[in-house]
Amino acid sequence: MAETTLNRRTFHGPITPDDMARALVAEFDRGPLRAQQVGRGDDVVVQIGTRPGAAAGGRTALTVHLRRVEDGVMAELGQQEWLGVAASLAQTGLGALRNPWTLLARLDDLAEDLAAIGLTDRVWAALNRTSLGAGASHQISERLRRLTCAYCQTANPVGAASCEACGAPLGPAQPVGCPRCGFVSPAGTATCPQCGWSLTP
Image (cartoon, rainbow, N blue to C red; front, side, top):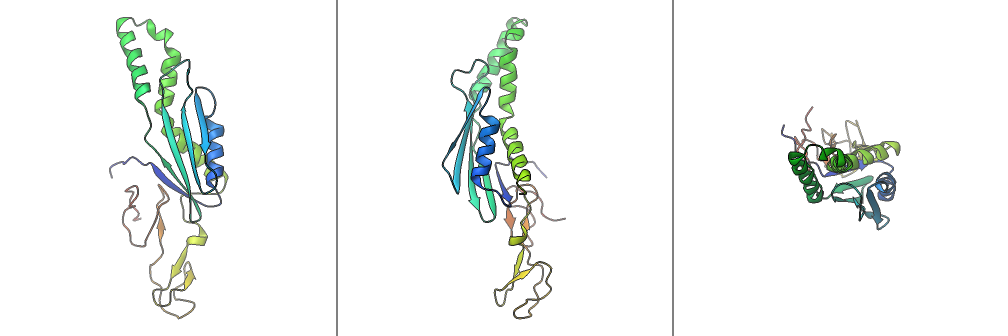
């Protein structure tokens, strides 16, 4: 299966957008980066970017949108602004072509630029650590694992062969959560509509 860029994930469990936002600010509001939380409650945005006047490296920025969904939080990353980093790397490369010794003077810039390139992966890692620490994951929570009877619309526990209310057979109607991004899909869905991951065992 071809790899697709994944910029949205759902974390199911006892976690709030504020919890995730605080973790991101704590992780990224230091060194050459600045992070700030905008909003509170069910809809929070965290902006992460290079501090103005940073001594080393190019400028970069990334926005993380955290939204409450049923039984969890959906995190969505915007496109990373990396042109400042690319310009800084190009300047380092051109300087090295003219005089390889200039690399010694630009080691700080080079290190900051390389760290900035991996900012998206670092944000996902921080969100995964935070969700695991709070007991959340990409798997559907037990509260959402209910089978609805097609005849009487009664919610039934997972594994029930027949409806508790009317006795009708339930069949394979259980929704599935994508193990990669956490998106909840109807039963029988072959691939995740959000990230393209195969949902068949």
